[in-house]
Each structure stands twice: as structure tokens, then as C-alpha cells.
Image (cartoon, rainbow over all chains, first blue to last red; front, side, top):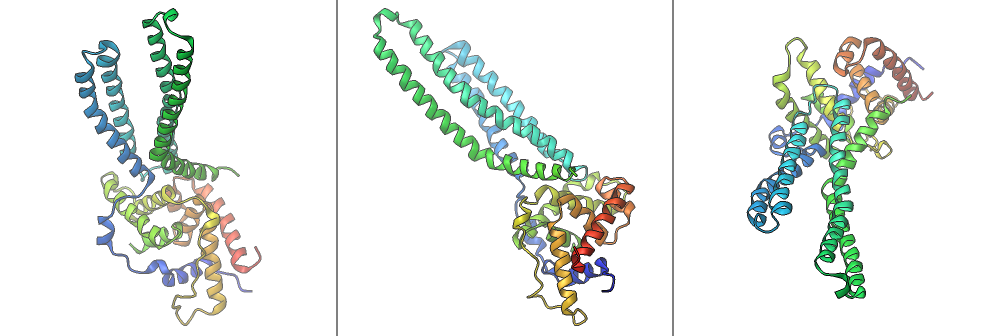
Length: 198
Length: 147
């Protein structure tokens, strides 16, 4: 068999393959980007604006209630999140397709995965701890000898179930909003990294 | 545009994805045009952005990649059946390569010099040479039916 010229074969296939059909550029530029990064950025923007609105509202509504915990701490946490969202949004915006996309994606995945995991930690630690703290405060208010041990047991049991259900619900929402996108990004990064292996 | 369309066609798995890829390349070219330095050739920059977008967007399951078939495509009269089969084998083999290898092969098949490939992909010329030789042999064996 004669030596195959793969460049020649490639060019012959190129002229006749289906990808050569006309594409409507006008139609293309009216569509939205479909990368996982684009959609993560959209969700981050939504969270950013929600926080921006909620920070002054939490301050107004809770400033006279429990001054330190609600009136001050919650707006501060909100402000930290606003900065954090902006940090991530700017990182995604700055992603540059003209440089080493592998290193860039790996770095971005690191930031976004940390963000995703921090939600998981908050959900599975913060919600049960909040409940435990709330119960502890109630214990403090009422002298234990006046309260039936049985009713406290019920309160604790119901609270554990309720906080587990709330955690599960939030976990589901975080997975729904970020999970698939982050996993897709992880898949891309892993695939690109596998190229480095012999 | 034909070059972009062709590269996207090799990375995408179906017609709808080709359109998505081309659209993303167009957006990224537009967004990054200010970063383009006249020291490099325009084509080098376009290739780089196109390949990077394809790498960043391509879906990962190589096993599920649709095979290229030229059955419904009108071929010119100078292509016989054996050659048609070889073209299909070549296209399918390229589509099944690892993403980074595919980028190197694509540029080689587009007749880019080792120096240009190195510049586009940010590799050394020596590394490009080694990889191109390995991949070229691999593809030739597949097309010849010996691989």
C-alpha cells in the first residue's frame, strides 16, 4: 500500500465534511454563552445582588432586637459575602482564553470548589449548631427543675430532625444551583490534567 | 471562519455543539481583541483562542463521541471508496484523541509549522516535534489499517 498522506486526506475530508455547511453568524451572536463558567457567574451575580439588598434590610429589621447577633453581625457577614462574590465574579471575568487555559481553569476550579464546599460546611455545621445554641439559650432562660425532662427530650429530638431536614433541603439547593456546574468544570480540569500523565 | 468552524467541528459532538463552540469562540475573540499583540500573527491568536475555548468547553466522554460518517455527503469524483474509508478513519481517530493531543494534530493537519504549533499551544518546539511524530505514526497506522 502506498504511503498515506494524512494531511491530504484531512483536507479532502475537510472540503466535504458536514461541518463545512454555512452557519448563520447573525443568529450566533444573539445567543448566550453556554460555558459552565458563564452560568456560575450568573448565579454569583444573583447571590451578590440578593446580599446587597439584604444587608441594609437585616440591619434595619434586627438592630433593636438582638443588637450584637442580628443587628451588627449579620450585616457584617453579608458584607463579607458581597466582597467574596465580587472576588469570584472578577476571577471568572478575568479568565483569559489567550493564555494557558489548563492552568487558568485549574485555578478557577480551585476557587469555585472551595466556595461550593464552604456552603456544604455551613449547611452541615451552622444549621445544627444554631439549633443547639438556640436550645442552650432556652435552657438558660428556664430553670431546669421547672421543666419536665420529657418535654426537653421531645424538643431536642424534634429539633434534630428539623435541622437535619433543613440541612438536607439547603444541601439539595446548593447541589442544584452549583453542583452540576462545578462537577462539569472538574471534569474538564481532570481531563486536561490526564493529558499530562504518560 | 471556515478554520474556526472546522476545529470546533472536531471537538464538538453534534451540530448544536458546533454552533455553541463557534459562538463562544466569537465572543472570546471579541472580548480578547484588545489583548492581541501585533507581534504575533493574527492566525496564531485565532487558533489559540479557538483551541482554548474548545478545550474548555468540550464534553468529556470520549467513548460517546459520535463517529464521523461521510455516507450522506456528496464527495467529489476524485475520491474513491478506499479513500473515503480512510478519511472517515482519520477523522474518527482524531476525534478520539486526548484533548491536548487533538490540538497538536489539528494544527499539524492544518499545515502549521512546529514553531507555530509551539507558539499557539505554549509548548517547546522539541516537545511539539516529539508529539507530532508519535501522533502522526499512530494516525497513519490507523488509516493504513495496521494500527
